[in-house]
Image 1 (cartoon, rainbow, N blue to C red):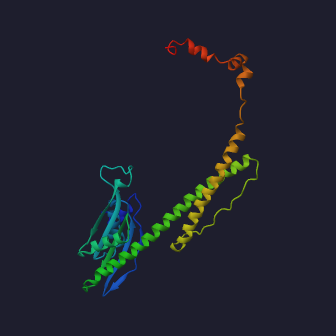
Image 2: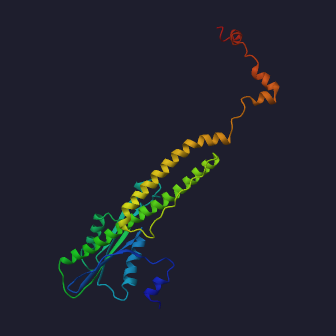
Length: 275
């Protein structure tokens, strides 16, 4: 029979990967640690839980795998195309034998405003009862994992924004170069940006400034392009002569220059106007 680990490895989908892992807390033989996964659906959340139980901790099973997840999903019979009201946040928590612990993890996720994620706090029991302090350890691990998740999520958001704005700025510059070339001017050159191989959370303030700068550059260049565009269009499409028909068809031209009918006489001939 194929082992549980092999069944996970043989799946066509990629295995869940923890976004962040908290530091371990050790107290009188017990060990606590939290892992957080990015999960957009309840199915992905359940897969993350099974991954931790059956893969990460397969050789050393935890005494308790306490977890909670929150996902933004479309409401029943809603497509998600009508706006924000089509969505709702669904959640679930599990104590796994550690009574009330799952709700503690879920509370942390709500307080940290973490959505589309699953937090799993694992405890290995060391033989000594810890009392209420165990809940503090569980929450501390969950808070650390959620904070790291939010940091990476924000970093990814601004990295994606910068990539998108860089692409848009490159297209806008190409359009500007084409206009300058049409005008017969010297084609401008732009220095490509130099970025680090990997952004860290400490780079976030710099990332935000870069995104703002790119957005401003695109708007400014777009204003210049819009001002230059009418002149380029006029140059490419010269104004046609006023009366081409007059040159090509003298008969039509004579009709155009024939006097207007006598409006006063027409009016007098109308029986409606004479009543």
